[in-house]
Length: 174
Image (cartoon, rainbow, N blue to C red; front, top):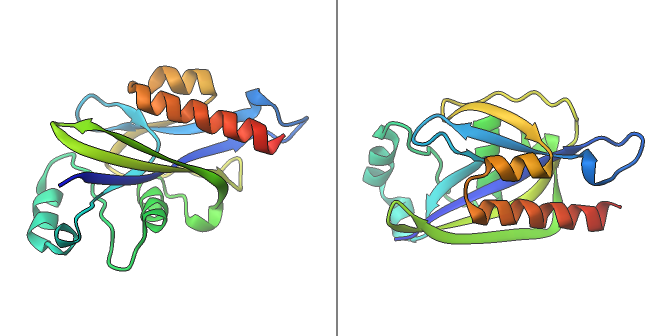
């Protein structure tokens, strides 16, 4: 079964004096476990419908130290999962975000010798100074410009997605 993760690339921008490339900052979270990698907030689910219904899988997943604690709830779609996970991992609620239409990226790669798919949307915080309340899954967060965000993002797929998101924002927000 392929793991499926859904997340938001959250950004903020200074609106004064004007919007330009240097005013966009991305929110990255540092994982508490493993290699302490930096990524946008995301939650995991199993693609297979039967796995979603398997309570024993949920119990096993939640027992694991440092395991992601997200799954697609019954009746929940991928974007709803991303919004819920963002709230759980950062304290940012859906009402505090604006989803940017027209940007959706799907990353496919191997993680721990299993196929994994991650779907990202762009979301802007409505309040530049929004409070971040980290869950136990993360130990730190940073708001970073594109270059710094790409330096911290260790995986080439994530770097490319951040660059594509930035390019999309610069072309649509100008």
